[in-house]
Length: 305
Image (cartoon, rainbow, N blue to C red):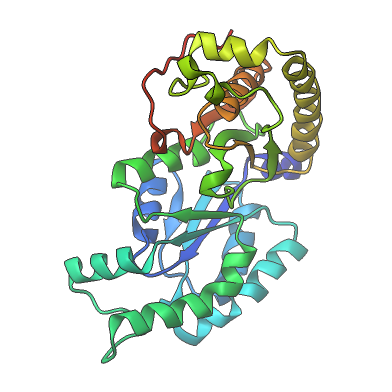
């Protein structure tokens, strides 16, 4: 009984990524949320520490550790540590922080700190070397957060939506996110649905700059037979997938819904799916990644019934 309860409630987050991308801010935010946090933990100690927390009867059920190139040659053992966690069936997730070269250079210039790989060298050389070293870990990460354009408050809200500690144990956190294919596919999505086959309000002059949350636009999309059929199938599939992932111990699931610009069809479907999941008792967070990138003249939240 203890092992089942522990598996469902335990969360072990490994934070890594580029120097200057915001790992410390992530750790501080998680600590404020109730996580037990350890900074600069060498990878050789991660498995032992995770196993100790996982087997513990104490309240250390939500843990986050930061590990990065400050560990020097010890950092090379991180892939092996992650594989050992898999072999021991210890639930864990890897969060990778990154930002553009320009953003990293600006942040280092503002703080006047020295890059760990660039003592006596040009800052950009250190950043380039770090990207190369971290390429393998980045590919293994469960979540990649690009902080290039993020404010501190934006990052905190994002983390709160993804890593909230719920009093109800064993419930998976689901994020449903709309996006526009023209801006790229979300790299942290577990499932991606392309809804560009649905009727497109963009070609109706009145709706061109109205979002999928405006009632008239929502009705235009939602009243189409193909939309109703798609939603029925989407709801059935998400019911099945969420149940299976939750049984396997997955802590969170990200479902991305994409259309061309991320303003009409994907927004409407995302809102509908989010509302459906809430009614089913799922812990759900709804996001519209690319809506701010569009020219919006009318938006609303009353449309999705």
